[in-house]
Length: 174
Image (cartoon, rainbow, N blue to C red; front, side):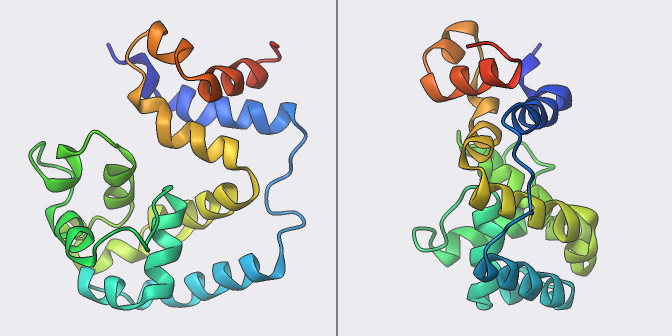
């Protein structure tokens, strides 16, 4: 069983880390990031196709950043293929990549499964802005979320100094 993919680990450990480090997400967020969140919130629901999302560079940059991806390095054609391929098929473009950040991004904006309603679901409207702010204000939590699914053994965890340090701190261990 893949115990590192459990919701309790992926959600609970960052929350423990945040509590332990007394970081309050969203409080004291710089104005530029608040403006990006406001733009995203005001416009994401208007997007009904993958092509529309890709053509709005500001929305696309925000959405990709929320999942630890960089719009500057992602070819639009590749993002389009992933968005139209969805995640329900193990052979879909996003699922074929070892980096599971792509599958998480596509899952949040799953046009293949939800069509034009993909951007009105909580994963897009609620979860994505939270992840974006976390990535901007707490890069260690963002790193943990982006990489914990790659851990398949204790050796993998111990071999990644950032992950093991984060996990230990989350549970009060130094």
